[in-house]
Length: 277
Image (cartoon, rainbow, N blue to C red):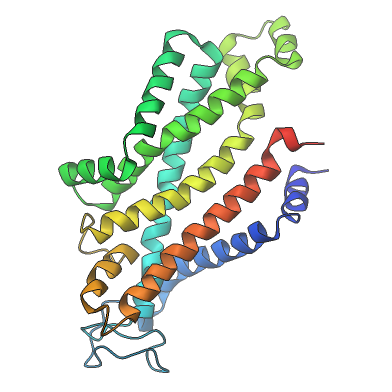
């Protein structure tokens, strides 16, 4: 059976993960296409301020008459951009560092474990807020900070998988063929150990989205960006008079993070080599 078919067959046993995957796919499609619709410009100001959800404004308008729906849809672009690129950065770093630590061991392994323990002890949100406040509030800075904070999760998982795989018989067999240690690591061990790490990368996307929203809520993001966290920040002043300004961006954050967590859990269960038959 092809790996793709086996993956989808495994996902069929996790309906919550499948539903989450469909939602994520729809959200990605919205984020990619929302910019092509001028009517969904979140910066357009009108005289219809504080309009409750209605036929004209599906989920209401804000104090400047801007469409909340347009802001939520455009906010998906920022959240997904941060989530995907931060997870990609964290996964790449984690795979390289964790592989080296698990394969070679020694002092490098000890250093990696101590560093990862440090990141587990220090609250990531506080550390991210301090770093972003010092380095700048642009989108690249936020992505870099979130990625740098998340790589230890991937490294620990990758280290454990590499330590398991390198003891298997086929690794000894390729060594007997005269392969160098580097070729054994990159050609045999990493490809056979990386599957569970991909599931961790999926979970990191949800964590990154939540962390970006928290930073934006505190104003630690570019004022030019339309993000869910910044919409929450703006709407809290009118919480009792215009509840929709905070409710819908908050629900967008909640549902999106939940979807990535459910999808990540399903992917982890399917890709876990211990569950293979």
